[in-house]
Image 1 (cartoon, one colour):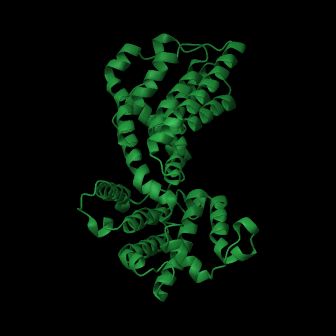
Image 2 (tube, rainbow, N blue to C red):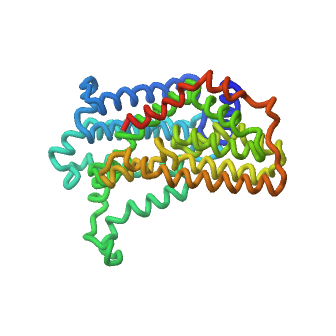
Image 3 (cartoon, one colour):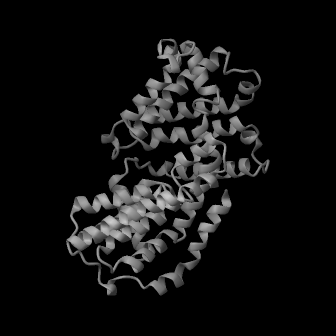
Amino acid sequence: MTHSAANEHADAAKEQVSQVRSLPHALRWLPGTITVILTLMTLDYLFNLGLLTVVTGLETQFYYAVVALLLPLVYLLWPMRPSGQDKPVPWYDYVLFLLTAIVGGYFVVQAEPILERGWAFAAPELAVWFSYAYWLLILEAARRAGGWPIALIVAVFSCYPMVADVMPGPIQAFPSTPEQTAIYHTMSTESIMGVPLQAFAGLVIGFLIFGVVLQKTGGGAFFINLAFALLGHVRGGPAKVSIFASGLMGSMSGSVITNVLTTGVLSIPAMRRIGMGRSFAGGVEACASTGGVLMPPVMGATAFVMAMFLDVPYAAVALAAVIPSVLYFLGLFIQIDAYAARYNIKGLPKIELPSVSKTLKQGWYFILSYGDFWCMR
């Protein structure tokens, strides 16, 4: 169970479940380039280096730049319909990509006038039309990447200001015109540029980069091998490996999908091999991977939003999650052990499992990364 084997399994699984469309060869450099630019821009903003002040001089300008970099990619990577996943990028998606980049770039350039002249309350006519366009483009991007339910929920709630006067008492307010609603969504710090985006740009990006680097340098394979070495031979071993490995991996990635793709492709076949049913094995991995986003130090994006809303350090939120997350995995572990005892499900032969001492010798230093995570915030 080597690092390369784990990566191969993860890549194969990702190809099967991902809805992201493959770009033509001439454009495959684009996502990577944008990632590098976003990383450099974020570092300049967070550490106040002053190297990219053209886009990081103002806080809102930086947020506009983050959206302007990432949003256009949705129209290239996610097709209009799921059936278009294996087809070339159609001409209208290139048009939408360019339109989104132009509209996003407009707000980056106009970030200073928006702030100084109060465009969130009274904007020029051109800015209003750009706001309408951005509103619609974001809704369509949400539909492609998140599906119809997410898009419909966002669309309905985005129209709230226009019907606020007919809402029940606690959420009743003065109504806004469509024009006022559009500029409120795009130019205030309460909608598109609100707390979720601020948490993502100010906190999540750094943690995600740290987690990805750790996995790509072998940390993911180390924790999976360590889980198999410690628990693979006990009764119901692969299921317990799934719990242990998902907790460790989830604490690094903060993503359920990444967790499943990394640990599930190894633990689910192993669970099937010792006699567990397909649905049970899939359920164990789903529960374990979901719990991974509850495990500090890197949790789901909601934890970062909580820290922003509560105005407390992220470390305080992560520390508060330690006991609940441990109890979650402990409860899952006990259930798996009872299930394995009831049906007499053995573990894997020790000869097929990695050695604990050899695994620790090859990657013990990855354990120290948890201390680095805590020092980040």
